[in-house]
Length: 127
Image (cartoon, rainbow, N blue to C red; front, side, top):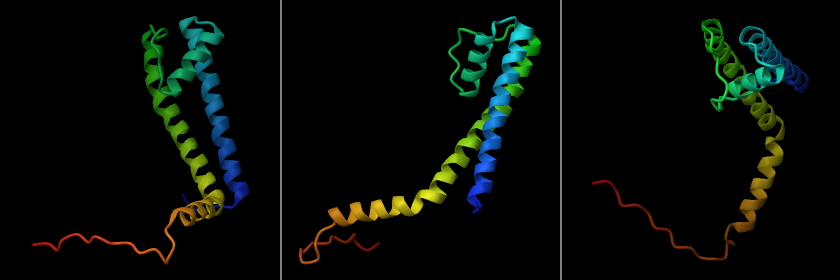
């Protein structure tokens, strides 16, 4: 991920989360009105579908909602994966110095002292 300032990264993450919420709302309305499910069942199906979990107790029965589900999942799962990768990129970009410092401290606490002698076994040379 390219290096962006903190405010533009937070803005992008906010927009992505809003898009995911809108996808859940849109899916809930479509399943409610086309399939006749309750809002809770429609939201539940939208959520487990976008989370790629799918338990199987609910499934579209009409051709139009089956087609909608295919495109809904392609679009929704892509947005969720992109959002997750953006969150991870944000975390790594702004928290890497702290993580690196902790890892260095851990490494230094377990590495042997210089006065200790170690035997190094080298791999054989290629034939």
